[in-house]
Length: 291
Length: 339
Figure 1 (cartoon, helix red, strand yellow):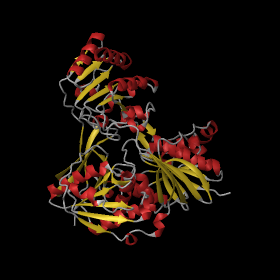
Figure 2: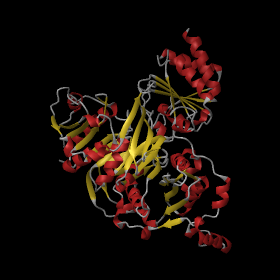
Figure 3: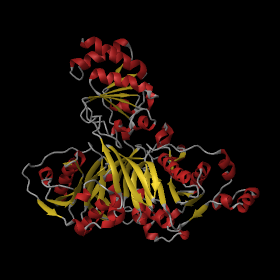
Figure 4: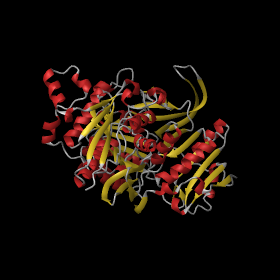
């Protein structure tokens, strides 16, 4: 039976959906430390689609691939707990300040280390930027056929994959030969939960950097179990032109960031009482706003 | 050369709204820059399509007409735009932030190594000095958008790479016919010069498009719910209010993300932009990304238990109270006073 080599692109993101009052500093900049870091939601939908391929073709392998600071190794572990086979963290200070183009360049150069990829599965977009650009850009750089907004994999037949896409005004089913890159929508099936056995198996999985200050016992466990060794790649491990990375590789520059000052309107406060609300309704009817 | 380009998305022979809006924006930018406005139309049976495009003040329209291009697929459509941009070197390229534009834009940006900013809410021309090199740039495109979940507003520039590319959601810009008799030039592209047979590798098996059942853009009254509604069930009361007032129901992103209501009702930077006569915000805190899509409403009522909700500061009427208690009263007294 056919086995597919699957890469899942995942990102650790600040949970911008739950921004509390302490998330903004007094000077209007973001207090990143106050935001919990989470697995980007649509990347979990992507992982589920990869797991479904593996369900159909059990000999397939899933590599969970992420780029970010050292703590993003958590994303790889989370992927392993849910069924990925191995993982890579691409991390280097040289990536700081990357826009989507510099990010997709770094990711695509790193993915060239992995031969014969059949399918790359990514979430449609990350909630910290909402750009939906990195997936299509990685596909362009690797010369892989892109299929965006995938909601489900209908079937895999004769080395062709049938995909249902969710568009603004409807759905489309397309067929595409391997290899390809798909981006997965939030409307796709949610990711299956962590598996207790896999948590036991992978709870000590670490990147080399995490072992630097770890106790000897943990170091020994990881050393004696190759599957616990999460790949940690830096710029020196990939073939990349330094000029195309980070800030210098980013065509877009942030010129200004503002915390928006609300121009307060003169508003009327309406008491939430029967009288207050009836008066408001009468006012809106009399000035023809409603009715 | 170095003009402003707009990618015109076509559906059933019609240039879609967002493309018309961008043509108007593009004309304005071209006037500021003293350059031409050019447009691209890709599809099948496009005879006469220029009649929909020239009136916005388009000087040159490039048409790629081939039956295989009828529906958008990434590789053939992007191959045409890539090559056309390589030949004509636009300084600015605008695309709708639609399913099509958000698929096409990143591909072009990667192939041409040019910057792309998604979901802009404002586009203006201005100068820029690089903080490190002190190099000065004249007449760049300021691409302005809420960022970081809508908690900040960022101005992005692309100093060195061309074209400067931006996508914009439908409804953010206003469309306006410049001159119904505006004279532009049509350039018919020889499609086989632009697209290879291999580009048609993705085959569309079926396609079911439905006209959206929700018409938020055209609604005079919008009753919108946020995360503060708490549940899908609680949204039912908003449908009742919208029903008696003759309005539509909208939602903030937090509410659609939480699954309280379908995505197509999302109002804001990453959803629909609306300008109704009356906007009733129910349990919506009012982050920038939401306000970007509704702050032009003629009148705003904010119902919220939090007296410090940002929405309250842009509202005309603030009701500090629980939506589940206030909204039934609005329904009750509206019925009583309109009998």
